[in-house]
Length: 304
Image (cartoon, rainbow, N blue to C red; front, side, top):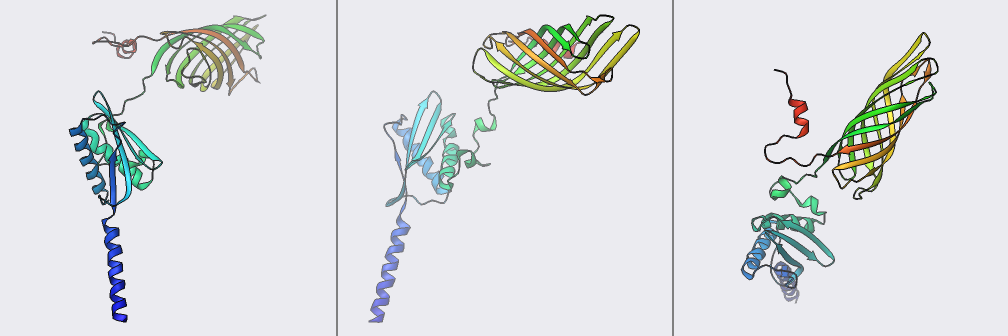
């Protein structure tokens, strides 16, 4: 009796193990979304099956899990969508030849339950990932006119400034400088400065947008009073805010308020500056052919 019972248990366990071993992963095509030709679709499914087997998965019915795949081809590129239950991933292949790498990243991501960006490894990098497209930046030269107020000298000095600015949609960097000079009751007041600044636009896609920024630099202030001359120079902090117009054109305009916070003194007193200016900027159009850009002439000029 015990012998029969033992044989029955072995048979039952063998049957269960056999059934578990036969269960595998099934792949179905969402034909309503898929627009590949039948022959190409068949080849694509075969490639996806290979990707599953490389991940150590068993294919075939009965299905323990079912993945639904679709392809949308537009021109040479193919957008692949892989879904299981409520989870899905999408990725674009630049050509049919890139599909095995795309399948590998999609399946690796879904099987491991990680974001798609973590499904890439050294064996499945696509051409676009190896040579990513960079965000284009815009370069422009700026000229500013305005006035600078000195609390220490008690005067408002006419100001002329210039700069070079490189912009992305949200961020920009700028190298800028300015100079100012005016007469006082019994002398003159003037100064020079140059700063490296970072800017952030509050509405990056808009044609007109406010912005804020900050930077550091070096400057000097000179004040003469009768026969006495006072000078201060050193590092400066720079904070500012402004509003830029016509970002969609090659001609830009902006108004800006500046606060300069020196790390030095003038006449033994701290001498911050507050300025207001209006500026115009020119964004040179893209160069074509063998014509060098404007900055080339400044960096490669020489005297014979």
